[in-house]
Length: 116
Image (cartoon, rainbow, N blue to C red; front, side, top):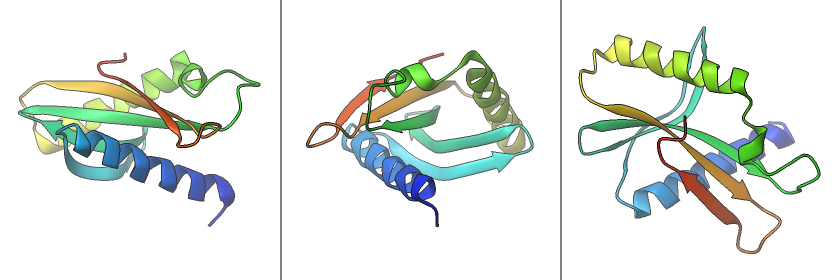
């Protein structure tokens, strides 16, 4: 497994633990379809929460949240829509972003609910 893959897996696990500590329930990770990938799918009440996780250890090119381009947002939206169709979910859904900054010890988490 490559270094970016290891970092991504670690970030997803770290984000999942944070979200679970705040009452969200894990549904699945790394949902993939031809539109793209969703890092984590969580649930709170009847709301499905699609989570984009970003890990950064430097601010040279912006923080982890600034790295989510408009194009990436569109991919996440389309992928989430595909998942909702696949499971025939009729309830509410939202897209959250979890940014993890590893230049701090312990790493700093920024969680934005309903980010886009």
